[in-house]
Length: 183
Ligand SMILES: [Zn+2]
Image 1 (tube, protein in one colour):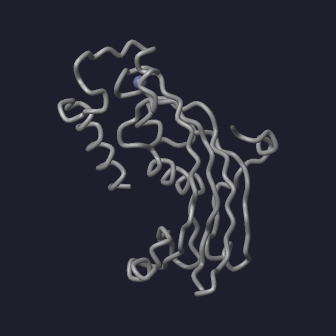
Image 2 (tube, protein in one colour):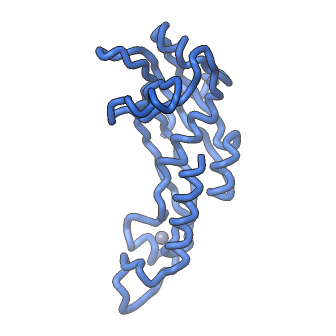
Image 3 (cartoon, protein in one colour):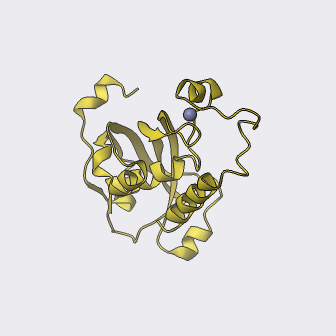
């Protein structure tokens, strides 16, 4: 759940990542999920908020970074029982700043590249939305099969987790992969 304290803090619309790293800046606040259109396309609806805690700086190798966490809870549809699925997202963010593709390729593997020209700014909502999209499971479903059964799932004789013959799921997974790759 989102701590009550954060509910009073709004995130800035834009940040300048290089400046933020140089100043070892940080930000903390919340953003309505409704402000994230790509997430809305996938989930169909977006209620709730994401709470972000991010700080910037540079590591011992001189790499500028933005790191922190994103907490949200999204509502989706379970692809096994088609019942509602509440999905808590607890995302660890570790972005390494890169001026261009070449610099991005030199970042150590622990960093996810954030391509931004020096002096450039990025929209905080875009950054957060990218991370949320990457964190969504390819095939959303209740972890506990009993929850699916409670929502009417009934498929005697078939192993519950065997998705090989369930083509709609494979199509959805491919769509999501393509979507995430193209953003
Ligand atoms: Zn289910």
